Structure formats: structure tokens, C-alpha cells
Amino acid sequence: MSIAVVSYALNGRPGVSAATRERVLRIADEFGWRPNAAARSLRTGPRAAGLVLTREAGVAAHATSFLDFVSAVQDVVAERDIALLLKIVDSTEAAVATYRKWWAERRFDVMIVTDALTQDPRVDALRQMRAPAVVLAPEEFCQGLASVWLDEDAAYSSVGTYLVELGHRDVAAVTAPGGLHRTRLRLEVLARVLDAAGGTLIHEATDATAEEAAATARRLLTGPTPPSVLVLDSDQMAVAALDVARRLGLQVPWDLSIVAGSDSALCRLATPSITALPLPSGRLGTAVGRAVLAVLDGEPEYRWVEPIGGVAVRGSTAPRSR
Image (tube, rainbow, N blue to C red; front, side):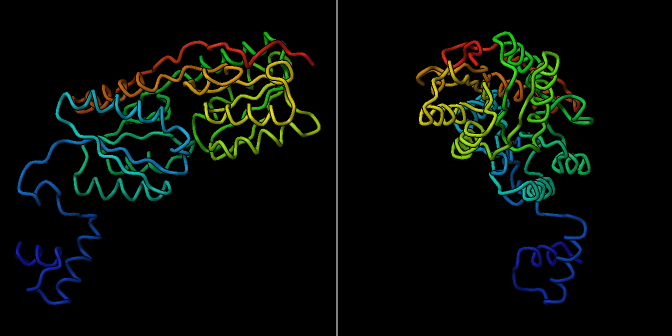
């Protein structure tokens, strides 16, 4: 077929029969072909890094820190006139479909994958497509792809050690969805420290919203054996748990200690202020931006581990009183 016939068929223009159009569309679909966005505009479009987020991972629960992360990524890649292409979808399957479409159309040069799952079809799809990517997950999870990772092991080891030194042995972790890779790693570290001290760890997975964190905290604190500590994934979740404790008549930190897995003004302005891990969203974004540039420069398996820092001890934690 001529170029003109194929163009008419793909763009829905008159001039080809229905049978010919159907044949062209079928073959294009079989080969995973899409029109090149830059060629369509008759110019070379700017290079781009893609970022597809899923609502499953609780994007809204980390809105402030996420904005810091995205801004830092953009600041770095903009030095080379690289755009950041962002899309929010409903599911992991929708993210994979977007990857395939964008890669077929060459809309991105490097994909950024956040909120990695223990079994992640997005990472598998990128490997199959041989598409360059930076994954926010440990090195062993990212074979063949670049890796940028927060040092969760050191951070949550510090949290566990701090709580054990205060005398706490009954700890409940209220986390984001259990399928997230970081959730599993955090739980493994906390459990390891508590086991060594003869303690126990209870795990409750949520959708990472403040509402579900509050409901889960209420259920744990009104149960037959309430924990002496709640460790929550985010600042919003921790503030919600603090409000539940207050409504139940519990005195924080004397009756209950609370720790947040990410810090913000919410933790610092709460009463009492909440002990937290300083989540370096800006530094993480900068590290990811540098990883994108490294991949473009020929380092497809670039590696970087970003330290989190020690526990910011505040008024929501105290020695165990019961």
C-alpha cells in the first residue's frame, strides 16, 4: 500500500474503502504501532520523561510531598529541555496500557515508576518493551533498569530501635496497601527489631487515606489488646490517629505513642507534635532527575540510595506506661 493510503486509513480520512481501512488498522494493532507524535506535528518534539501514577497507591494521601518530588524532578531534567509527561490513571493495568501506547508513539525517552509493587506488571512491561526506566525500588528489584531508593532499612530500623528503647513491645503498623514493595520492606525491618526484643508487630493495611487510617486506629485501640504504639505511613494518617485517640479519651503520649512515616507541618503543628521520619521528597526528586539524565547518557542500570535521616522525636512518643 502507498503511504497516502495508510495515512488516510489511520487518520480516518476519506479516500479508502472500509475493507482497506480495516486491514490497515488490524495490522497496525498487531504490531503495536502508533503514529509518532513528533512526526505528526512535522517537527522534532522535546524529549520527555514519563510519569504515570495510579489512584490505587493513594496519590491524594501524599499530595504535598508528591508536589515537592515532581518539582525537584522537573528542575533537574529541565536543564536539558526535557519535559515531564504526567498522567494519573485508575489502576496498574491502565498504567501498563499507557506505557505501551506512549512507547509505541515515542512520547517518552525514560519512564519513572513510583510506588513499586511486590509483583509489578509495570516493571515487567517496561522490560518486555525494552523501554528505559527509573524505578523507585531497591537495586535487586530493578534488574535491567535504573534504581533510585530511599534507605528504608536504616530508617525503620531506627524507628524500631527507638521504640524498643522506650520499652514498647506491642506495636501496630497502619500502612498503605500491602502490595506496595516499600510496605513489605518496612514491615520486615520493624518485625526484625521487635522480634529481637521479644516484641510483636501487628499490621493493618489501608488505602492510605486519613479516613481509613482513623477507622483502623479506632478498631485497634478499642480491641481486647490495644497496642502501646501506632506507626503510620504518612503525616495525614498520623494526625487522623491522634484525633481518634483524643476522642477515645487516651492521653498521647502517656497512654499511646504515635509515629509518622513522613514529616510535614501537620506533624509539627499538631498537639502534641508528632514524632516522625523526615521524608526527603525534594532530595528524592533530585536523585530521580539525575537518574533520568544518567539513563539518557548511557547508564541504563544507574543506581542510587538516598538516606532518610534519623527519627525527629517530638511530643507524641514517650516511655511505655502500661
